[in-house]
Every structure is written in structure tokens, then in C-alpha cells.
Image (tube, rainbow, N blue to C red; front, side, top):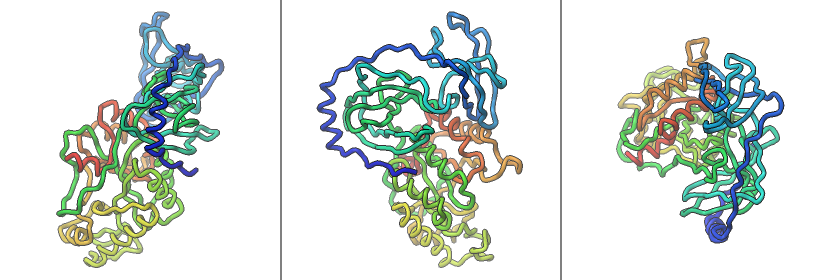
Length: 427
């Protein structure tokens, strides 16, 4: 992964704002280009609806499909439809062949499409808030990012717009994000899309408390990812969270953080402090209540000293690699704890035992009874409520494929994926 650029200094943003307020530019109305040749379309796991339209845009037929995992199909046309919002892709293969699906984060042509050059450059509004700009590699995967913020609305110019992997972006041509692609709220929109989640300052150590769900009226839930054992998709999941601007709490073990892949994850946590926070998942993922859990673990219930060493050793490793501290959050391996374990943990600063109210069971293969990507997303979306804590794993077998539809559907339900700290600060 390429290094993330530093944040845009606030004084630069303010200076740019003053100049940009004097800028005026028109937003040209341009017909959406039509695909001239067959292209692939990625349909993410989850429900999809295909439509057939009359010449006036009336719906004359529909067909539904629910996918347990993502698939790739073909399309021969990308267009706008009279009286219908959005852009539509006509599919030529698969169950929905002959039908059109609306272009979105769960149905899109991979890479860049719909490229429109603005002449003159278009003016983009940045409302007060935090923003993340992107550059992409030759495969249109994540390359670098730049973050910045403003305390009041500012404006900047964009040279072009395009859809990249289903999301609308504009390519900035002035100001602190010059040369970066900024996501916008909708195709052809003039408004940049803010980061809507938060990583709040952690709560004080205080007394020992167990959280399975946080009591709050705010429309937020916490996505949490344990990291221990299998790490194959971990970095891909982290990059997906960055692209989708999803805040999350990561619970790494010290042993997993010390691996090559684990160090890469720690580097991302360090690079994106406005998206990720950490908790503690112990050094060796031992069962601290009953004993066992691996070759490095005692076979009988660990002593108080061993419980505390598991936590403190992991804390030292994670802090060294990510620059972040887990205190006061910790998650007991296997969810195994009792009063003795909690007391030992709280004595060294880990007073907040973070459990969950939604368990995706993503550590289990589908052939062994684990969830598909679609069923995992549906379980989360169906059961989530304000203050929910969702348990997932960076090594989850189908977690990466579940995230696009999960995040899209949560946000459509006005539930923003966020962090443990954000929930606790609002409780």
C-alpha cells in the first residue's frame, strides 16, 4: 500500500476558502454516455432487481435475484432512463439478462466509467466537515489519500466527473485536493461527500462495565473486527473500509499484529486515526476464564498475573506498531470471562469489556455452517438498532464480500457504522 498523504493544514483550508469564495463556474448539463461495447458488471452479494422500461420510462417488467456471493455478468448499455433517476445498466448474461439494474455500489462496471470533462471547470461545495480525497492505481484500486476539514462551507473547482467502482467522484483541479478524486453525494452532484462517522476520544477508565449494546438514541452502530488467527483478507477489508469511509474498532491480538499482514493492518490504523480505533484482544488469544486456546496458553484457568500479562503484552505490541492504545477497551477471546477475569483486567486499565449483540460468525466457512456474504449482511441489517455492537473478524471468510451491501443497506436505513467510542460518548 502506498503511503497516505498528510492532512491538509487547517490554515491552508482557510486560505483556500477565502479565495475559492470568489470563484464562479458553471455546471454543464451533459448527457450520460452510452457504453459502445460489452463490459462486465459486478453484482455484489444481496438482493437485486432488474427492470424493463417503455420508451417513456414506465416499468413494464421486473425480475428479482438474491445473490449469496458476488458475481460478474455482462452489459451492453449504460444510460439514463426518461422519468427515472440514476444511471441504468442493461445486462446481457445471467438471470437478469435483458433487464436493467440501477448503477450503485452494489451493481457497477468495475473501474472508471461515465467520464465527463468540464469546460469550464465546475464549482464543488464542501460543507463544514471532514473529507477524504483519493488517487487510484492503474486498476482503479486505492493508491493514496489526503484528508482535510473545514469549519464552514468552502468551494473548489473540479475538472471532470466519473463513476469509479460504482461511486460518483469529481477530480479536483484547485485547492488542497487538487489532483485528488473526491466522492460526491450523487452522480452530477455539486456537493462533496463528507465523512459521516466519528472516532471520538475514548472514555475514561472508570469502573468495570460490560457492554453488549450501548444505550443511545443516535442513529449509529459499532462495527468491530477481531484480528487473530486467519488474516488472508485483512488488508483488503481495511482498504474497503477506507474507500467507503467506514469507522470501525479493531481488536488485534499482539501475536497477529506482529505478523507481516498484521503489521500492514497496524500501519493502516496508524495512517487513518479519523476512521479506526483499537481495543485489546490479548497477546495469544487464550481463554482467560477456563484455560486453553492454543499452544501458548495455559491449559488450566490462568492466574491473575497471567491474565494481566496477556493484556499488557498485547498493549505494548499494538501501541508500538499502530501508535494507538487499547485502554480501556478489551474483548475476551471466545467471549469467555467472569468476575475474576474482569477484575484482573480492570486493575491494569481494561475496565470496559466489549462484547456484542450481533455475532456474524464469519470465522466459520459456509461449508461448515458459517454464513454466506449475503446472509451475513442480512443478519446485521435486520438485527441492528441504535447502539448495536457487531462482531466480525478481519480474517472472516466472506466478510469482505458482505461489506458493500451491508454498509449500503445500513446507511439506507439511517444507521451509520461507527466506533465504540462514538457510541459511548453519546450514551
